[in-house]
Image (tube, rainbow, N blue to C red; front, side, top):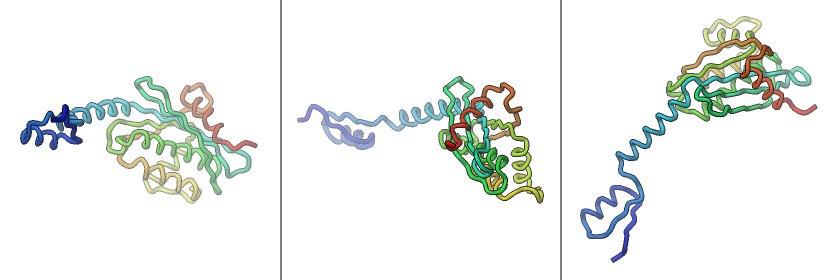
Length: 196
């Protein structure tokens, strides 16, 4: 008789224990323990996504169509922030579309914390662009103006589509005025600019 019999699931282990005298050792936890572990992980995740702040910034590079975008995701519990940078191209509206592209850094946040899409937690997005927030508001309320360019409107639709189901708020902060997250986002956006 073997010293131990290993199974890959709880049900098989239970069946072998009941129907045989084999020394069964199961490799997986009982369903109740798995459910408790999943709930413990979910509780940690809920704690992480409470009070998230995403600061975004953009600047125009050489020419009128290339923007460097940066974002910083800060946690209320003091965990290390996540920084990101990338380049965006906008044909029609340069910097405003660039600022909106930077706000789209929230897609990375949703990738790190998909439970936000289920309405768990909350996210505050900070930007130093009043123009970006104004067009985002007009797109969300369906009150577009003739001067709202296609690049900015398209970025707004991407943002609003990504944020569906998320407890999200948008807030303007004065740029280059010492706000620590805005300053970090400003540094990150420089990394998104192509080399001259």
